[in-house]
Image 1 (tube, rainbow, N blue to C red):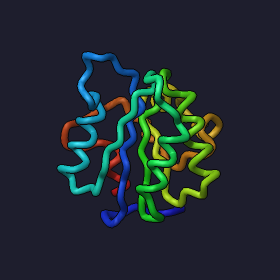
Image 2: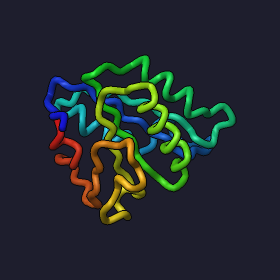
Image 3: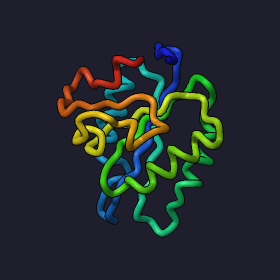
Image 4: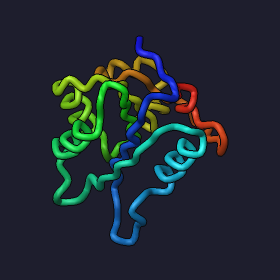
Length: 143
């Protein structure tokens, strides 16, 4: 099992369902990103709108692979509206020999009590916690 430390990098990936009136970053994504930054995690955010006509999960993988190395992990929020994209991205990252850890959180993970690997074989870590505290997010224990 690979270990985490402050020398690792994290790409926080948002795959949101957006509307024209929505801000460029969802509130939840922005809150997690900010909290990680404030806690010393070397994090970069990437956001995509899954309902955009130009959205393509393969293009997301292209961008991720250009911005990662063996010391970079990817955190993805898994929701009902992005399930298909998440599955494609997970498989594509592993097919391209992505060396980092894939961390999944969000309702698709929180509502499944166990056996996450059955649904997300390519993921390494599952953040399964309904509690979101301002100073202490579950993901911080890995950095």
